[in-house]
Length: 160
Image (cartoon, helix red, strand yellow):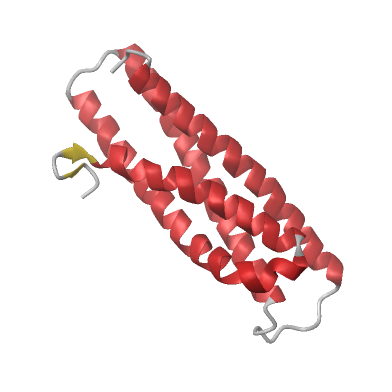
């Protein structure tokens, strides 16, 4: 399922969505938490991104693993496979950070939407959760960059 799409490696096609959606989730979730007056306008976008982005990131990592297995089967040199393994490690970290960011964003949405019947929480809870989102957003941005950079270096660094 993740190996090919119309004869092209699936990973090559899917990664572009992750490169767009992870930073979007990071930026909009942070803005949602930091600027309360924007919440009514950003809530729907953050909710959609918090659901879709982890799925896209997971598909990107799964398709990457399928592509890595394909390259191993073709007998690519160990130095290239080591670079791909580094890239794969960053991709896995991106997935986990994205999952945490999405969960935190959905929790913040639930606590601030007024639709969830929860006891009245102190305002510092919202700000603490916003801080967690900002930190996770920073990690998500760093890891999506490192993942993309190591992947691009493998392709465009004359190693593939």
